[in-house]
Length: 266
View 1: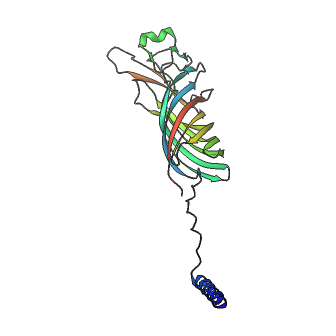
View 2: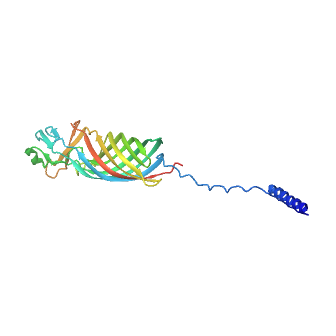
View 3: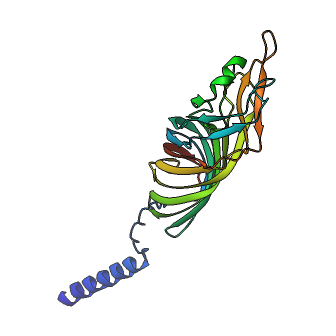
C-alpha cells in the first residue's frame, strides 16, 4: 500500500512539471517610450523689430566759400560758416535674417531698415553782414540722419540658448535737406557698419537681445547754403555751391534692443 501511494505522488509530480513546461513564459513588461527633447539650434530664418537710441557726430564747423553774385545781383563773395550739427534721438525699425549653427559656432546674415531722429541739416550759420540787403536765409549743408539701413554678416559663439556675436558690413542712409528752400531732395549716402551684440532664446521661436552699432556714412559732395530774395517782389533764389567736399565723415553710434521670431528648423 505504501509503495502504491509513493508511486501516485511521483506520477502527479511529473504530470505537474510537464504541464508547467507547456505554459508560455511570462515576459517582463516593456519599458515606457519617452520622446527625446529636441536640442535648441540657432539655425533658421527670423524676423523682428528693434528700438533704441542713437548719437550722431557731425561737428566739423563747415565753411563754404560763396562766389560773388550768388546771393543776389552784385552781391560780394563771402564765406558761410556752419557750426557743429551733432544730434541724438530715437531709432527704431525692423530686421530679417538667417543663422546657421555648426557646433558652438553661429554664422549668419542680417538686413535692417531704421527710422532715425539724429540731427538735421540746419546748423547755425554765420555769414557776411552785407548779404542782409538781399534777405539771405541760411539753409544748411548736407547732414543729419533721418533713416538708415544695413546689410551685415554675423559670426558668434553659442552657449546653448545664449549667443554672443560680432557683426559688420554695408550701411546706407541719409536725410532730406530739412528746409523750405529746396524740393526735399534726399541726401542718400553709403558707408560701413561694425558692431557686436548678445541674444538669448527664451523659447524655440522667440529670441531677444541687445546690440551696438557704429555706422559711418560718406558725405555728399554737394551743399545747399541758403536762399535769398534779391529784390522786393522777386522770387526766392537758391544759393547752391556745387562740388563742395566735406572734411569729416558722417558717423553715429546706435544702441538698441531687438525682439525676433525664429522659424523652426526641425
